Image 1 (spheres, helix red, strand yellow):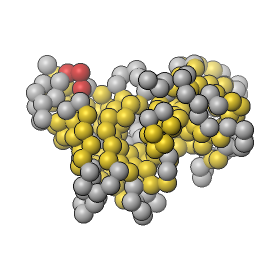
Image 2 (spheres, chains in turn yellow, cyan):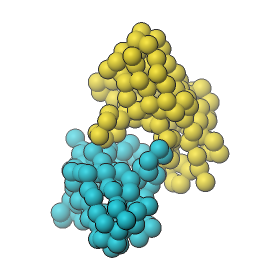
Image 3 (spheres, each protein chain N blue to C red):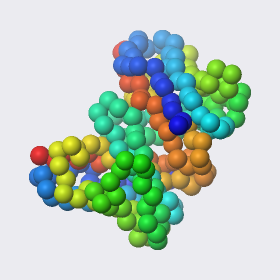
Image 4 (cartoon, chains in turn brown, blue):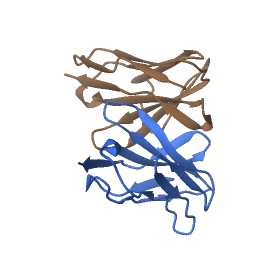
Length: 116
Length: 111
């Protein structure tokens, strides 16, 4: 079946550093990928839509200079948290449509970021 | 804007008990409705979906019926198992592929 892989699954970094999270569709192509953020015991909030070969579309209130998204190929999207601070600590999840129908998303297992 | 409200958790049941997790939504259009499940240490997986009013989604013994008149999509299962322990998310999609999630309900089934 369709698999979306995220790497790393967890990362700890110092405040002020940048962290890159990769999202790969392993056996299907994804022209669009979605990045979500999940706070503890809260719901998933859509951060941005990643578009292959063009700029990402950010949701209202999400800093595009803080959360850099690159979708360089049909199977890879990356989220870079720049100059991370403790308040950026969260669970970041990516998803991609298309493997089971256009309106059904396949989710990655998520990447837990802890900023010290 | 669109929103989804789920039953507050956590929910703890004994094995073979009947399960209901309530979900209501607000949407301007005619959304598709989904239940996703997140098992410990894993990503979200689609459990079931319904795309129009009165549709019933079902999978692994779980069911949910799209009720337009009550704007609800309650998740039910007649006899839960320990392996059903997970976090369940109700979600809607009113604009193609963008999903709006409820806050999630953590379910624990005790043997």
